[in-house]
Image (cartoon, rainbow over all chains, first blue to last red; front, side, top):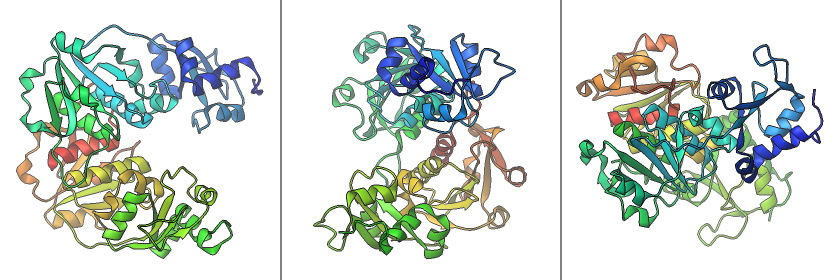
Length: 233
Length: 233
C-alpha cells in the first residue's frame, strides 16, 4: 500500500489532477468511480487504477491509503477508486456539432456534454473553454466524454462544408420560427456564461436564436444549450 | 469595522449560513452580492447589510473585515457584500406548479428555480428537498427565490383541486404524446437525482412522461426539468 505523498506515482496523480499543461503533455487524465473506470476499459483507454482496497474486478489496482486519496482528489470520492486514462483525439466529424465559445464553468460544460449524447450531437468543438479533462468536467459529464468526438475546426470552414451555423443570443429570432429542414448538418454555438457568443461569430452565423422566456434575463447556459439540442435532435 | 468572530452579529451570520434549523427558527436567510440585495430591497425583505467597504448606495451597511467575511461565507464573495433577508411564506397558488420530490443537490434546485421563472411556473412545492435558503441554492437560483410562491400541499389534494399531475420517469410515455389541452392547471413532478420520483407518487399521477433520448440513462434533473417546463410553458 502506498501511503507517502512523495511516491513518484502519487506525484504524477496530483499533477494530472491539478495541471492542465501536464495533462496535455502526457495526453492523460483521471476519472473517479466504478462507472467511469468501466467506460474507460470498454473504450480501451485505461492506463492504471488506484484503489483504497483490493478489488476482485480490477486485479491490477494499486492500493493507496484513503487519506492519500483524499489528498490527491481534494474532494470526496465515495467509491475510493480512481484511474488514469488516455485522452483520444478524433478526426471524425458528425452532422450535429456543439460549438462552445469560451465556456468557463466546468459543471456547465459537463452538463452540456451529457446532454449532447442524449440528443445525438456527437461532435464537440471547444474554443477557449475550461479544460474538459478537468476532474469536475469529467465528473459532471457522467462518461459522455468517452462517446464524443472532440475536434478542432473553425466556423468559416464548417460553413464552407455545408453546415448551417446556429448562434444563440438573448435577442435573436424565436427558436419557434426555425425551419428544421435547413438543419440536416448543423453547428449549435453556445457562448460564455457572462458575455455570450463573441460578436464576430454572431455576424457569420446563418441564424441567431433565442428561447422565448418570461422575466429573467437568461437561463443557465447548460439548460439553454440542452433545450436547443433537444429541439434540434 | 467589525473584525472579531466573537461579535454577536457575526455569530448570528455564521449560524444563518450554516444552520437550516436556525434559518427556520428566525425565518431569515443570507444573500450575496449587489443583484440579490437589490432584489431583496425591491421585495421589502431586507433586514441588514454587511460590506467590506463603505457603500454610497447602502448607507446603513455594517462594515466588516474582508478576512471575517470570507470566514463567514467559506467561499469567495467577489463583491464583498452580503445581506440578511426575511423569508416569506406564501399561500398564493398558481396554475403551473413545480413539485420537487427529495432533490438533494443545491445547484440542481437553484437551476430549476431559475428555469421555473423563465417558463411561467410560479409556484413551487419542496418535498424533503435540500433547503432552498442554503446559500448555494440562493446563489444558483439567481434571484428566482424572490419571485416564486413556495407552498405546502399534497399531490392528492392538488388532484382534487383539478390539477393535472405529470410525473417524470425514465420509462414513461414520450413527452411528444402529451395532450397540452389537459394542462391548463398542472403539477410537474421531478424526482431525486439517484432514485427518481417515489413509487407511490408515480401511481397517483395522471401521466408519467419521459424525454426521448439516445444512449445514456438519464439527463441531469436540472436539465430534464427545464426541458419539461419549456414544453409545458
